[in-house]
Image (cartoon, rainbow, N blue to C red; front, side):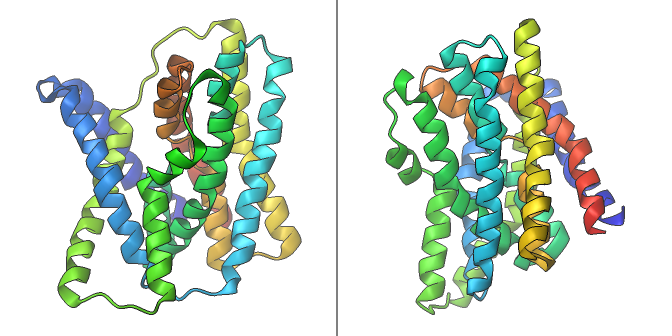
Amino acid sequence: MSTALTLLPDFALILLGYALRRWMVALGDHFWTGLEKLVYFVLFPALLFNAIIKTPLSFEAIPLFGVGAAAMLGAMLLALLARPLFSLTPISFASQFQCAFRFNTYIGLAVAAKLHGAAGIAAMGLLAGGMVPLANLAAVWMLARHGEASVWRELAKNPLFLATLAALAWNLAGLTLPTPAGQFLGRLAEAAIALGLLAVGAALKLRGTLGPAGRGAAAYFLVIKLLAMPLIVLAVARHIGLDGIHFDIALVFAALPTASSAYILAQRMGGDGTRVAWLISASTLLGMLSLPLWLVLLS
């Protein structure tokens, strides 16, 4: 329980971001859009790079990737059942499909830092970086018939994926950062988590009518993301004997709410952005309750 309670300050930052977006209207939407871009393109890549280059790499991380991939693939298979179960149009289904398995890296890194410090950030960064191609491949493929986006173009523009690749290359090459450069990255990393969580809260949107079929489908996708994925991790991790920090990070990864980038992708590819925005917001708010409950298992 004490582990779960340590997340209260992080969730308080999310709620503060939501409140500031509604109360300080003078800031304008452009302020929050700019903040999200700053976090996404500068601060979080710096956080990932700084953590991964300091972490010794070994083959021990391979089971972690296997468990993460199993959870995502299981969620995708369950999400495919939503099409015959609910009266969804093809574009609406394709848009919401990604909400069953995409993950909010901002929250994941914040929780990993609370659990295991720099080692937790590095482990979550490696897992998230490894799962980004799989998540983007599935999401873009499902929406591809309705737009012109390329999977590889999406990956080439993903700063978290690129930062992970760069950090891995730097680490494997045995390079070291000059002290001033390390301190510079450290300052950026310190700002990343707090501003990232404020941006998550500012993006929450729960307006809009889903309709009876829409509510049923939304509930189904939320159950997959917040319940089924962690259960898959528990089953697979116990089967292969994954434990320690890697077990903790795998469980946190699976229990994360949906990433806000799912809305951006749906909008850019002509999808059902309204329902995706609702699902992201609902999963974030529900995740503030479900994630601490999952973390009780780690106490």
